[in-house]
Length: 84
Image (cartoon, rainbow, N blue to C red; front, side, top):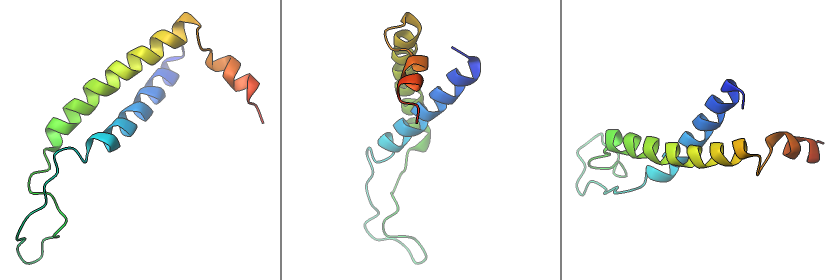
């Protein structure tokens, strides 16, 4: 697999996982102060969520890479089959 393809696929998986992980453990502020959004979380825990996202994305990417490299699923064949 091309190194550029590897990077692009990992980034796509990472962003998808990030948007799935962001809502985890979100608790709204009960009485927000003036000028604060009432829907904003009390503690967003972004660093923890970024680490969790990276670990999950790495595992999913390793599975994808293993499947793609063994030839079980060929990206080239999929591209040729569904060419518009």
